[in-house]
Length: 501
Image 1 (cartoon, rainbow, N blue to C red):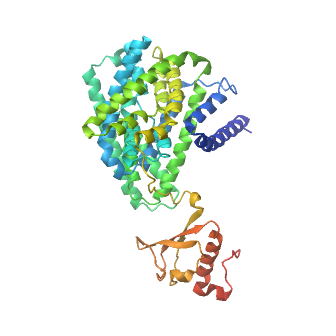
Image 2: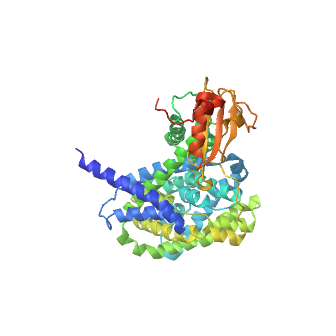
């Protein structure tokens, strides 16, 4: 009935599935998955399957939507206990550090590439933002001190806001660009301040509402939480403030609240963020014209070296000086300022505004991201070891509702003791679970505790049971049997098999 839609769905589903499989492939090779997604987009484009896509406005709009989801996931998963000690450093990197980086890169490309000042500063602004998706995906695989990880993640979540504003300001022309510098500084301060306030308001109101709402389905809570972060962006944008900062602040407040079904919320946000990354990178790969990239290699290398060797280290040194960050940590912060999709999306802003030289800027940024992502992301682990900033394996948050304990070859089972169940009144040792299965936690009247063999179960209890993969089925059968016939289930010939009733 709709052959065009059918083909689009077939192609879209194939791209998503290939991209999901590419995550495992790229991890084994030590390559950032974003490069695989970009390559997919290029392969689908005019030089591959022949799909011609040159809609810059649509790319900009969809790119902003993807960044909203990615930044929201970063905020939701950020732990306030690790974020709070580094908040000042991250905020300084996102403001003063950004300005230093813009000036240094702008000066370098002006002198070395002969660009006019406006376009040179646009190069600096577009390249000054670290990428949340690249940072989150790369750092979480490394064993690093929480302070370093929190600093880089918070910086990548916060610096998009001022950078977007600066790129928009530099892309304006005519009467829009005639305001004095102090006016633009006031506008920038207003947009950041109001954006943070809008995000705080959305986060506080959202966690209050979600705690008290009795939604009919657990699946509605993740949708509501992500919807609140999008609402924060829209509220900030309507007030001509920074929507990206509002998203991050709202995400942090919601992610650190004791919300119902919190793990489901985090799992849903993580899945959405992966989908946004895949779509964004494939779309950017479609937009680029490979035939023009050869001419962009030399400018990309010049701008990249100025950024990595001068601008980033100087911006880190200036920002870290008041916070007494050691030289080794500063060196790692300098090398780990990863660029990814954000600079490419930002390059679509002057392109859509038809700024002279914007087409070359887009190509240069694309090439730079590919080259320096390969160079930096693949070397983060050895650089961290060489600098002595690695950390031993630490306990990490386990998303119980989203995945089995694969590495331990075990599963977590959740069991409710409903009114009338024969489990009520049974002691834990009378469950007689098979070897390899154990009741690890009981939640009763809102309080959790570790049960002992003599703990008597009550109606309304929630149990968490760890079972190895080999005895999981047997443990489930035993629990079903006891729930139907009590502690003497075997005496009544009840072994917990499914009865079809």
